[in-house]
Length: 224
Ligand SMILES: [Zn+2]
Image 1 (cartoon, rainbow, N blue to C red):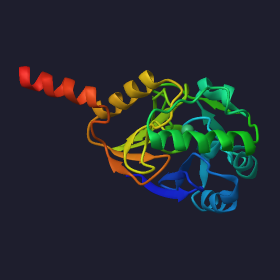
Image 2: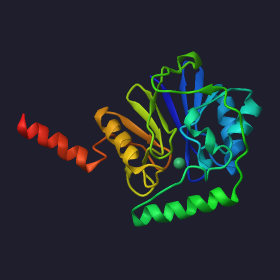
Image 3: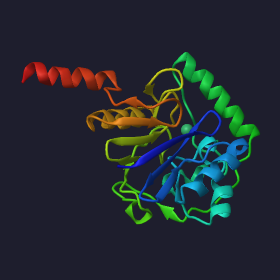
Image 4: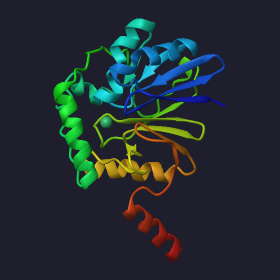
């Protein structure tokens, strides 16, 4: 069984996933929090930084931690266009809260800086992190960004911003492609009983995230 530590990196979560004296860090938080995160990485002997996607709040300490710990960074190649300018992939929102979050995010992309970094590992569907001591599988969950990934270990799924729990647990309030984002959310639902670890907010049980998907499954049950 892995040990999971949720660390606040500002308005965003980072996670240390540890097992038998080895560990990985999932996302890196905001720069104001970097010393605390570095200290925890040292305590747990983190040997890999995994980025769920290229947004600033998740990647702002990637360059700093890589240098301080001398460890590799892993990310999907499909988000490399966001480093260092997060404005390259457009972001859309539909709901009122989504539009508020979008305005805050765009202002942060404008004002804050993202130190560029060179990843050492490009992740794709099905990759496993066991070389770094954690039996965890990469699942591509595009839509929030093109290169959004999830990390699954046992019954735990780290989703980055593919789902959100900022105000309440829901599909992503922001996305570069809504249709694909919803397909990824439906894919998570189909994975069954899991604990979901969000980039924003507290963990929550997996469930039906997309209404149409729920109707479809209910319909199938009724007609079978
Ligand atoms: Zn994001």
